[in-house]
Amino acid sequence: MAYLFTHFIGEQPQGEQIYFSLSKDGLHWKDLHDGKPVICSEVGECGLRDPFLIRKADGSGFVIIATDLCIANGRGWDAAVKTGSKNLAVMESKDLIHWSKPVLVEVSVPEAGCTWAPEAIYDRQQDNYLVFWASMVQLDGDKEPKQRIYAARTKDFHEFTKAQVYLEKDNHVIDSTMVYDDGVYYRFSKDETTKNIKTDTAPDLNKESFTDRPVPNLEAIYGVEGPEIYYLEDQKKWCLIIDRFASHKGYLPLVCDSLKTMDFKPLDESEFDMGKTMKRHGSVVAITDEEYETLVDYAIDIGIENGFIQEGDTAEESFIPAFDCEGV
Image (cartoon, rainbow, N blue to C red; front, side, top):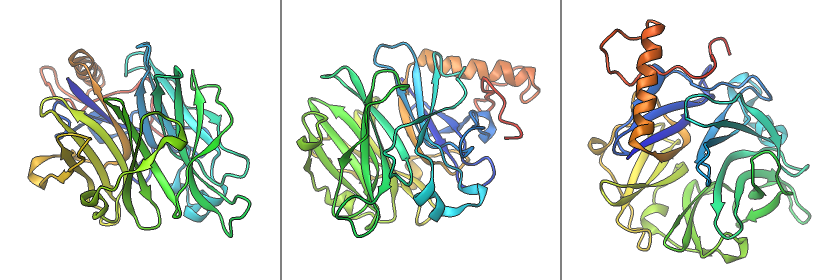
């Protein structure tokens, strides 16, 4: 068992593209391609933020969906919120190495000012994927636009049902992530007003099924966003990572023995290593040892061919994607 972290690194030139990192334990990460992007966008806003990687339920490959947004282009956050893209950027791969170029798919409602931090989860009951994201919309009765989580369903990440409001709170809400465990869906979302993470749970993916689940230890941490949850197989623990954006400290892992208790405890800085780059909102998936070795072997072969590493090196930090990001 190993782990692949798909992320971006910030608002600097080429920072809002897709980067890969690998880990054997889910806590200590090595940046691939020497910390350079592995997938870049030349469509829409020419940026790829908040990438979410999902393994297809039928085992046929992988999909990345990402925010079509580039703050480094100079238009600023106000424009990004009010007149940003209504599209998801979609990329597909059979082997985690050869990726299709980003394709934009419009999913948001016409009134949306942005389509942020898309994620997806497979619905076992309906045999399709629920895709959800944050959009700023002013609905009837609103005094001003509000961030809500919208959702649509798809079977192929090309055609989607009509977007509907999926999660609404009194405050603005963005950055939702979900995981399924032992008959329960656990959802973690950022309260965009108070800047902390709130949790709710449900037996299925119907929006009416969710009930709030207070987690005091988690809610007490402010100035965070981009929650992601995954299972640490070796430790038999769940790991929730949260991006400490307000303090510019990067991701902080918190662990718990069971999602039923959600007694999350933050790790000490000595207990994890996020790698050389400052990782921003992304996703972590478990991969097989074979998939891990394939990524490493490809990195070594292509790295030698291009002179990035020397014969006999086993460094995991030289990864060349299926297409070139240089100059984007």
